[in-house]
Image (cartoon, rainbow, N blue to C red):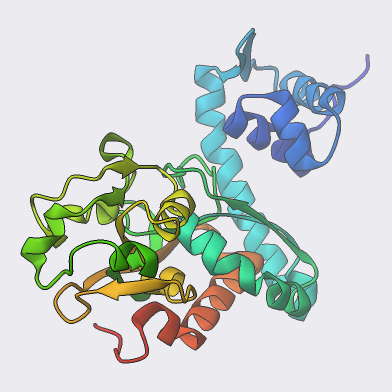
Amino acid sequence: MRNAPHFTWDDLQFFLAVARTGQLSTAARQLRTSHATVSRRIDRLEFALKVKLFERNARGYMLTAMGQRFIDTAERMEQETERLRADLSAGSAAQRGVVRISAPEGFSNFFFTSVLPEFSDRHPNISLELITIQQIMSLSRKEADIVVVLDPPKAGPYFTEKLSDYHLQVYGSREYLARHPPILSRDDLPDHAFVGYIEDMIFAPGLDYLGDVHPRIKPQFQSSSIFAQLTATKNGQGLCVLPFFIAGKHADLQMVLPHEVDLRRRYWITCHRDLRQSPRVRTVIGFLTDVVQQNAPAFLGPWRTPES
């Protein structure tokens, strides 16, 4: 009688990819293989274990009760494998693979993408995936390896550290300010058109700041995109609260009440505590921390110092 096949660590990688995504096609893209290969490896694993790990339906692959129990074991093996690889590898040989980062649109598009060539030069064996959709990616479900957030997790198995303070001011285009009454104090601000976020789509409390400027401000144009807000402001749609590291690069924008209106927010970097041991994750976190510190004046403004 033919013996049942033994499962391997590779089989567990296929299991975890399907468990985390619920879709064979998505798992196949992550693993850089075919849909058919993923299906075959899941069937092989279930046959070797003699248990059903997934329910198959039109929506995808859903974990069974046994599959839910098995995922804890598989993730522990994944973590130990990462540690073993780190111990056995040295230098750049340990720094290989894909790292998925989730970060706010402003930080991603107006800062991080500008330093990508430097990262690629330093670490050519690490590939990056950058997610900028306006939602919080789940670290617990491994939707992202690293997240940059304005409001860090208050509990859970996460490593978190402050990346940087950053300052925001009210800005208007020089053309807009020239054709509207002068702004001499905060109480003049509600008389002007404002650009801001859509209130019920603000994905992080740290972005809800118009009330901090003046409680009577009501935006005339709202967008979930900071890029759209910047463009509308440059086109004279109204005033807007913008980070210095974004607006400071545009000579056609002018600060309004710079000594009276000054908001501070913080970027935090966080990852699942177990992934902190991964060489490639440590490499990306170290790089981000270094380049943000090197560019501190862009985040703080040249006349400010970091706050504790």
